[in-house]
Image 1 (cartoon, helix red, strand yellow):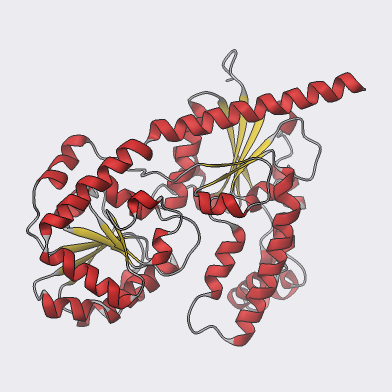
Image 2 (cartoon, helix red, strand yellow; image 1 turned 90 degrees about the horizontal axis):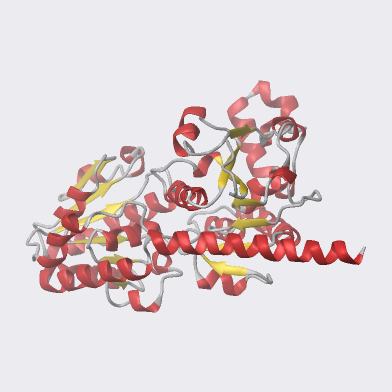
Length: 428
């Protein structure tokens, strides 16, 4: 039901960014919650989906439309040979289908959205460019302005894959072809949006768009002051290092595997009682087969409550060496009152006041070892970083500020769009 006097917003989100256990899903939920604080919101979930999960994620929505698009292996010519070897054809289709085809509305999408009237809304907000474009909203005359939250840029995601080790020449050639195609698509489609959100100033600065603002990632799990108090006021004598992340995200698995193989042995030489705890969902036994051979490493796996894990840790690490966008796991560590040692990629887009303080950036693996050994030897310094990091989160990365940016940008975008429409109408 639409509330009297409230504007109507259509929120478009891909199915893969609806899981609140992932950083992408948490940002989706934060934006949706900010929108519902001011507007009446309907939701379109694009792609393969779990209806139950979508219903929970968007419980406050007026309606949730599940919009399916044609998968690469359902496109010709792959659809013809798919029955012969479904898995192989699916992999080949994902690798070979021209990326531009994945940004266009297809017959299945149009059928799914048959009863959605885009002109009914005062504003359309899309999570990521591709799912927004797949609905067709960027290719049709729509009376509502469109805001796109690009967060992890499409080109950065492919560039991250190019950085993966042990890529064969033909795979790199294929990825470079995809990268050029995506860059052309972005150059064509992004200017059709009225406004863009990025997660960092670094991303905003490289976009040639007239209207861009930074909507920073913030911690989704913001513990209470009581939970954090002891973390930031009491010296922790435990020599436990914590990594939080999903095994299903390849850069996470690669990063922590490299840390265990190349950094952990040197750390335990100096601190033989040190412990490394790995927390997060996914098949860690498949990603980290070396764990059973190294002392002090424990895979905790998925947990319902992160607070005890952060309480036990002296500090955190994010040795993730590739991947797009800013890392919510870094901000979350600070929110729980824990400093963190990161690879340069994990510190991408963070403000200067975080760096070389609560976020210690290691330029290489040798420095990663040095910084970890230093904090293990000085719990008092780790405590100082914990307090400093939590203070930055409270001041600059809180929900009130996030909600204010979302609502003010939306209201301004609607107002500017209506003003232009009124001027155009007066000239006809």
